[in-house]
Image 1 (tube, rainbow, N blue to C red):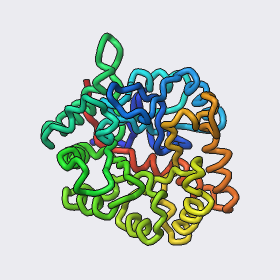
Image 2 (image 1 turned 90 degrees about the vertical axis):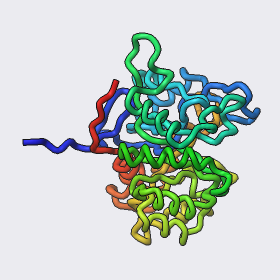
Image 3 (image 1 turned 135 degrees about the vertical axis):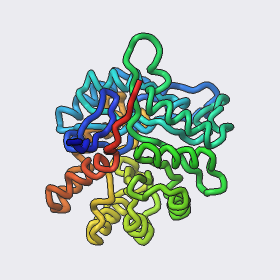
Image 4 (image 1 turned 180 degrees about the vertical axis):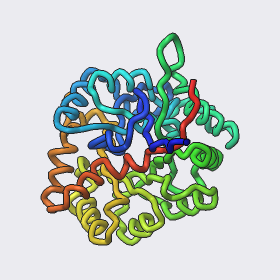
Length: 322
């Protein structure tokens, strides 16, 4: 008798069951190496010792996992992600895919590729490990999500790379986390993926709380998209006026299962161990406490703080690797 394989999430230390992920930061950055030719304001995050200490504190407070959304070629280091996970005990999900071209500096060959060639790059990482982790005798690190980045309009976005990501999603079942420019053109990107045969249930649209249009959010959720909110630590986005009321309206409409919460801490100024604030523990002191003050059921809080993103990342397909 054939046994049905239970869905699992690929982390940098191997597959993990969704129910074992615990509290999950649905979108962040743990290490970003500097890239020659990148703009001066491109994020750099290289204090691994400080990040490791903060991850350990996150784990001690009840944290379970972080989804690292830095794709290859623009500062990702899967070896460092593996080290941080081992040192802290926090599950880390790494990403294949692509970011905005401006973060690649002077060398961005991916953006000159056809959809077929780019899909081969992403599939190669899923099957054989992140490129930078294959050297030497160390075991390769495998990605658990496809990260892609939209520009402010459909026309200015790299369509060949979007087609490649859609192809790989269809072939593997891997979820796609899409950076949006403050939620711009989200409806159009959803239509694109529908035309590409990608189920909305495999999509995560990121940073969409920067466009707090409740009608749009309900439309996306009804279609099946998971919406990632992450402006809690950024006063310029006025979280008390925007993201918190948005969460309340989504819950009131019955869409709590289509929201995942995150920190998006690419900026060292957000890390307490690096001299900034509020730090990763803000996931508990700010985000979790805000949900507690709303008197939400425990199961709903668990979903918003990890269960929803974990279920989205899980795939039942077993792959031959290495």
